[in-house]
Length: 218
Image 1 (cartoon, rainbow, N blue to C red):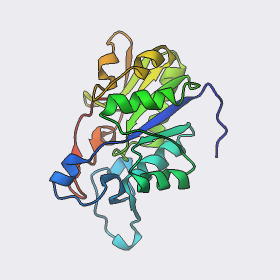
Image 2 (image 1 turned 30 degrees about the vertical axis):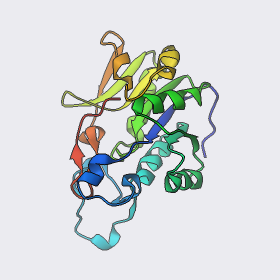
Image 3 (image 1 turned 180 degrees about the vertical axis):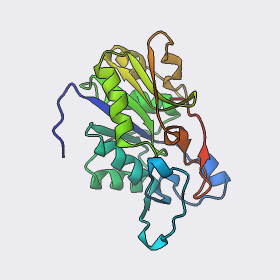
Image 4 (image 1 turned 60 degrees about the vertical axis):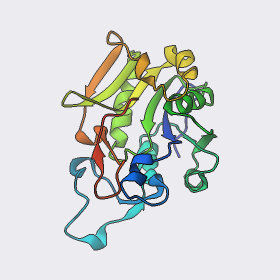
């Protein structure tokens, strides 16, 4: 495991949602435990390969957490007390957690930031976007390290994830409530946008292989 310093920029993985779209589309059980093939940034839309025997299937959240860990940045998961399988997965990967009966993404972000006050910045990342690669996290973190107050990935003009905020936004992030995401904190004059690949705007709100492309609020 990489050695982290107290002032590191870290990744907040949000996994406290209810997966309503997933269930409405016929998905069963916990969306983030649904089994997906290993995502590839350059083959983000290919759920089928020529040799199915070589495809490794793991829970959706596993792939998201693995890419976050591969970035070398500290990772913290925000999830609900009742979602034991997600907690067990994080424990197996030695990832710290905040448990909260969240009323929305804003409340989840606030709880995660309050639990990681030693960090110098936060990369906000939904747990159902495993096509975001380790290099994507590093790219946003590098922008913050280089002086950007805010940074986010884009693909063909569409906003993607992760979204990064430096320490100047610690108090504002900590005060978010309900489903008020961090989007309200984005300022055009402060935001550095970084061109990336289609996987950075792709979520898995629908059961495999019918995942969807959507622009999340951060």
